[in-house]
Structures are given as structure tokens and as C-alpha cells.
Length: 153
Image (cartoon, rainbow, N blue to C red; front, top):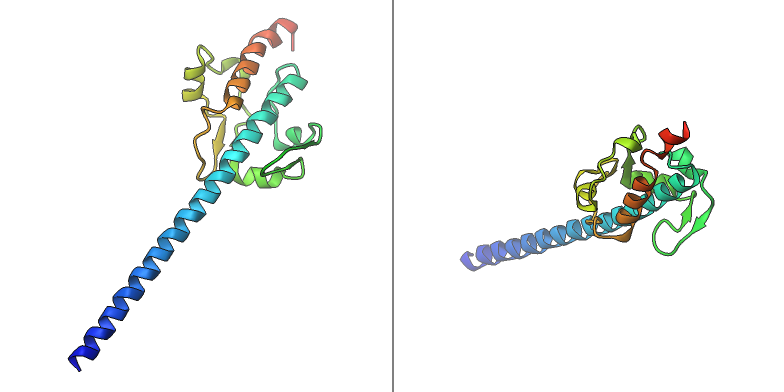
């Protein structure tokens, strides 16, 4: 009887360890997949904002619908077609559409990366401040800062 109880306890411990380990692995993989989706949504969002500003004399869009009016684009990877993938991207990214482009701090790229918060992930997201699109958006914002006042826009 004593051996039977120890055997049951041992089996319970093994099952508990396997279930716990499996749960942790599943949660880690789920987080990693969501963070990867967040990263790709961030890349696309930055690219779209840059394109929108270039097409509208430096104006910041007022809504996701404004971005959806950009020319259709196909790209490799996640969120392959725009604007068809707009709703998916919106699940991962938030944009502050009330931003005044002329008030965004652009003294340096580093300062911009630290303080710019008009685009925010809505969940896990791998860091993206070292990717090209942050610098491209920064350069686009700098290009148009103050120009709209000079043009009377």
C-alpha cells in the first residue's frame, strides 16, 4: 500500500510538471507570436504615416480611414495587403490622430525615438526603434515641420 501511494504521488508530480511546463511553453510561444505581429504592424504603420504625410504636404492623418485611402500596396510578410489588412493592424497598433506635427520634438533622432508616442502597440511588441522606418518617419516629420505655416495651410 505504501508503494502504491508513493507511485500515485510520483505520477501526480510528473503530470503537474508536464502540464505546468506545457502551459508556460504555450504562453511564451503565444506572446512571441503576438509580439511579432505587433512588430510587423508597427513597421507598416510607420511606413503608412510617412507615405500619408508625403502625399498630403506633411499633414497628419485624422483617422485610419485616411490611411486606408492610400494606394493599394502589397508587401511580403504579415499584413500583406493594404488596406485589406487595416482591421488586423488596428488590433495591434494605436495612433494618436490628434497630433500636431509641428509640436513633435525633433531635435535629434534619439530624442524622437524616446519621446514620440503617437504610435503605440496595443499589446506585446518587439522593440522597433532601431528599424529604418523610425528614422524615415522622423526625417519626414522634420521635413514638413513649420512648412505648413509658411504655406498658409
